[in-house]
Image 1 (cartoon, rainbow, N blue to C red):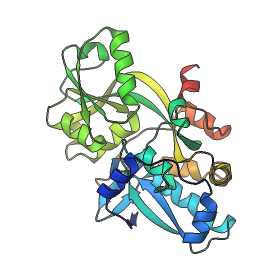
Image 2: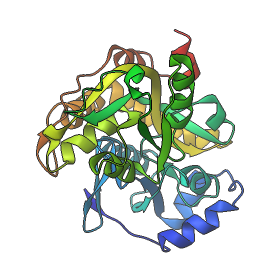
Image 3: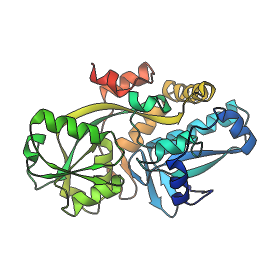
Image 4: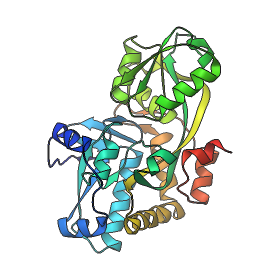
Length: 302
């Protein structure tokens, strides 16, 4: 858990990102010259990446990236490399990586073929299932029960496409509304402005666990998609990707990644000391045993 250091206000960064093009692809030289690395983090992406308040960020991917960076300090002989924690959203994370504002995006991003045209992904470090979050008393247990309901998805997330595909396949009609980030999406569910929220199971469970009354909500319904989640970095910089992947392979091989998984997905986590109780899936165990950066399309084809 670290305090964030910001070079510019978030609003300014978002505006700059909107029209930004790709940054020059020599991240390792940039790190050596500046002595700093910018880590993209999320405000409400528990348990992968989330804010605790007072400028502190934590989570599975945050801690994993901190260990990757510690390894880079040693491997690249950059002992003074400092971390700047840069909050990102589903909408601006890709532009901020592409324009060089963020060096490693350590949030909740799905690796898919469309995004690979703009950015690169490190080795898969989590595999999520896209499902529903609903009020515990709603009685909703599947997408078929969403006829005439209001469903929230987070702008810029892969859940937007998933929701539309499964709405069509199930032959149901529901109103689709958008949260500006995952925290906003959960707020819509909490306040009754949405009857269900479609997103990654870890995000749903993480937000529910952090709620004041977690028993009021539950993860429900069928699995709509299985998606690999990975650290995002700039495209066309194979040297930096290789350096990051090497650190991830080390953490996978020595069991540290598995220990981090247990810490964040099975054991109680801050701020409310609630446990998600999400044991490691067979898909993630396979990704650790045979490290890869396959996009989500490869998982849907299985």
